[in-house]
Length: 434
Image (cartoon, rainbow, N blue to C red; front, top):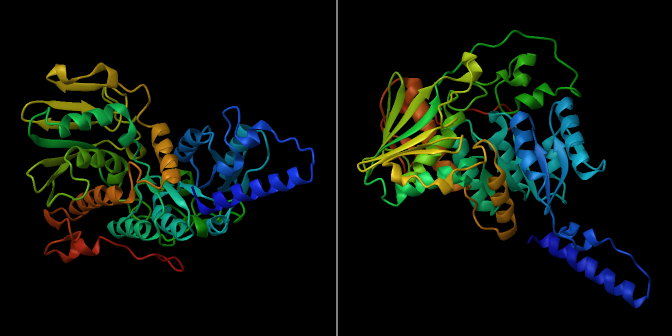
């Protein structure tokens, strides 16, 4: 485990020996010693969260029950969210110990903190992850992990250099029906792979500002910190209520990465391409089609965006985020409802149907904590995230420019297209920098 954990353990041992030598009668609760199924405090992973809205609460609900994890603090620029998460944590533990902070730099400076959950809006994911790694913390980050290709590269570079653990919130990598569909593709049971289908929201990129409204007290909503590295614009309460989605300055890849971070990631995995990307991206009216070096096609199918179209989340009988893997001898399709459809039907294994919604990350968060302890690489580590996110960003840039683009997966840059290469990064608002 971490050095500080060993230091705590040694301290308790020395204290116990000293107490025995003085013959002092001491009663220690069994839970403090790790008996009765409890984990001793000195052995627990200390966790905090940065930016917790609806999605973050769902992830935190998966983390709080872990017996070897202690949630100690919430940092959010909105007072209402700080209070809501503190209430959630204090009720879980039966105490009033959860600290509340507004500036995540103060949180990262805590020496008693091991790991952080980052569930802010997209604009903050990369910078907060990088700063956490530099502060010696392990990170579970919601997706999209970076609003640009360069941010995703910087995350991977930083975590490789610092040796910290990074888990992208692409939880479908650890859910049974998705992993079985990938198994069918990788094991050759579909024959030679031909086409992979990744469902994504129909991309959009809005540049117009919402009407300016009076700036709230910074103790209630710290607007400057909410904006962070994103370009300045006047306050409007709809932004902090979630209407930042689809706004070019705040969103990743014109909303394409909202689902694409999951579905393209699964297609990369099915094609044994975790370490590379497609070579070409061709935008169309209803999709972006990409081609890998092995000839396999990746089709990013555009579906309605419920945040923009005021339509219900896209659902088939398979649920949200459906993917489809096609080979010359069969195909498999699955989604968040947990079931699979296969051709031939004999490929379907009833035992792999997941009763856990694809939206819930219970196994994924457990995988993260196991790797915090073992220092092994988790299921959606920074290197895997980098390539799948880069592929998504390349598809989004092809859509934005409306032209076919050639891509070098080693250099991670477009070939012979300066306009496309400029879109791989964005300037950060001062004083923020990577």
